[in-house]
Image 1 (tube, rainbow, N blue to C red):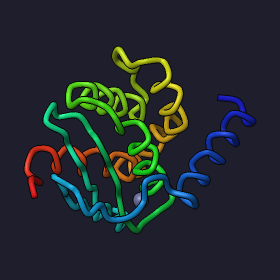
Image 2 (image 1 turned 30 degrees about the horizontal axis):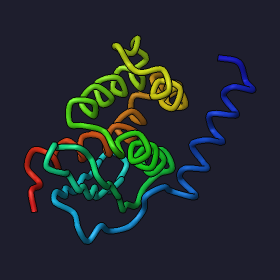
Image 3 (image 1 turned 90 degrees about the vertical axis):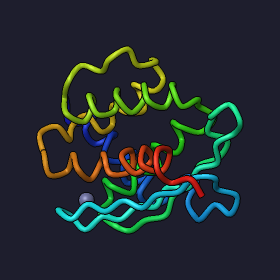
Length: 147
Ligand code: ZN
């Protein structure tokens, strides 16, 4: 990866961590889960509103932690809003591949472009936990976080 691209990616991550999208509690949440990454001290709470068709009608998060963990949560809310459970699963699988530096499995092009900013993390295994925290928390919310 060349330096200008790396700088651009760092800017995107900083922008998400400073101006997180979809931040704050969601009163009408149907599902909720809290996640914690003890390696770094990151905390993320994911609020979901799933509609009758299991589509993500609304999604919000709150959290505290390093820039990567909060940026990743912000990026995730952008990606998951409006998606079905199946589409969300596909995005999560793809994201886990991207941050581990593996080829992304059948990921839609626009989603892959959004996730590419996290691709540099594969060189830092500790940071991968920061980036995946929000996604595992989302998954817990869907599976066990019914309100
Ligand atoms: Zn972290």
